[in-house]
Length: 346
Image (cartoon, rainbow, N blue to C red; front, side, top):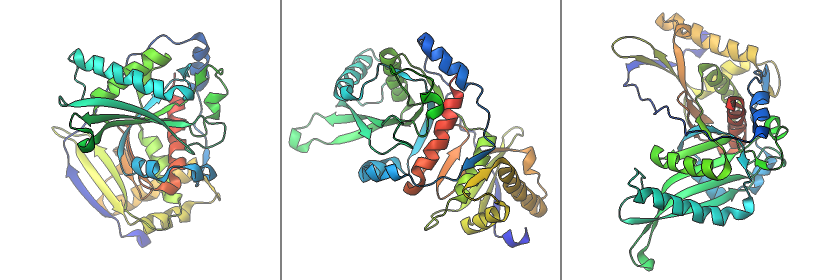
């Protein structure tokens, strides 16, 4: 691996930053949903996956909405199917959720809206945000602040955004009746208090529940391999890994940055199955990185824990944070996240 001597590594200390590990309380679900949980709880990890590709359905995307979704940090959740949800009632849902948030604010709850603003909630579809025609339409929910200034001077500020999607969700779609809408992947950007309020309303209205979606080291390794395998017209960022080393009194983080072209060359040297990524290739790719690092720094990364992966396609953290950087592979990134969300529904 001497031809890959360009990586830079920097051990550093960092204060641990953990999200509040809360669950938005579950409501009793219909018996039909119990079969979904049983059938999706023990899905085996596929030994191979397709390399993310640009979907033809993305041609229907609204470029402005897609641009809004990119380059933002989203917190991931899995979501059980929505009971009696209707895309024809989005305006009504906007009104009802607006009223619910206003009521919660009057109760004195910590809703991040500001004292001098009225609240407006919008629901809108994200056309083309699907893997197949069978997938339900993705939809976007936003909480906006409305200034009480005269209308000509009024500005709307986005306080919170969440979006729901299902990309190649056949394993879940095949198990539920028409009464349920399956959008198992939920992504939120904004104050956690607002996420909790919105989640509570969805629970009460559609008999569903949300669960934080963490990403373990195994799945981060898959993401690193799949995203490195993507052909880029232009690389925008280094390929970077972050490992956590448990120690006292403060944990030690090891950052390992690689030029993206070198990372792609390494991947090409271990990749043998056109159009696909296999478990064997993922293991070999990561083993090569471990060996290279050990040769230069005498540190066994296999004894640490991978907590973050960052590439020109996307970056992901084990605490369930994702930032999607490349429009071309948006659907591919969401497809894997959908798979993880479905697996977590139990």
